[in-house]
Image (tube, rainbow, N blue to C red; front, side, top):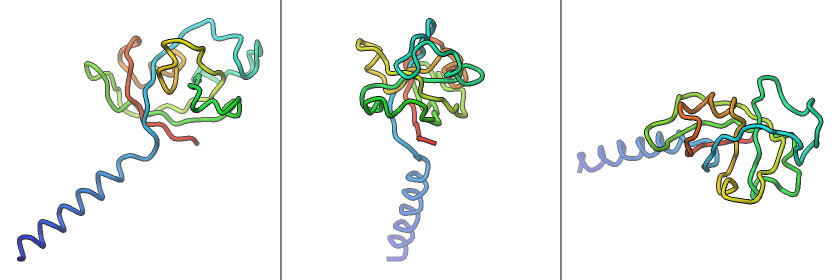
Length: 133
């Protein structure tokens, strides 16, 4: 009886710890490169891009009829083919909606600079955790 009780306590602590590791939504991301303008948010205005060119385009699910413009997300690579993740996270600003096509199968398209901050491979498709900040 004591063994079963001890196992139950340890098991519940492990579950609690595992549940604390995921803080946001999960999805996929890929990199996209120039030309970055015009964007769906601010057209040809270069001022829309944050310092360091750390920005993103979002899929239709996050686009929210344009309400996503200017939102910020903290993005972390969690897995992918050949272990692409560098560790850490990157904060991106939404400046665009991804164009219809195969790239929109991703949750986020990250600018080349944003993608390079979290992935070792520029052409990888990665699994991400993201949170609006």
